[in-house]
Length: 97
Image (cartoon, rainbow, N blue to C red; front, side, top):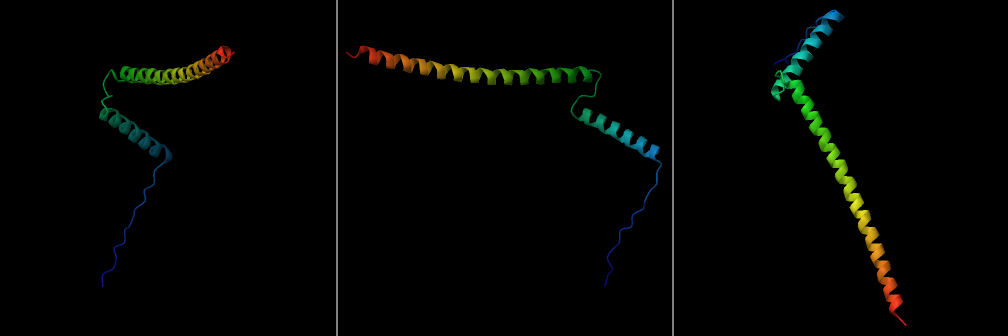
């Protein structure tokens, strides 16, 4: 019979400062790699990100304005329908002898 392989793990002990330095370095390298992956790693990257943020703000404002406009149109239509119904009712009652 064969014995199952036992995985042996070695533990490493690092001082807290060294671990934090390694983690910060890895985070910075990961961030640079991610920015490079989406094409935001050049000298104009900060400008590009500001432009993207402004574009997103403008899009959100346009969505909000469109929503408000739709609600206003619906309310105006409802009020016009009520006024038109009232006018028709009054003309029908007014024309009867």
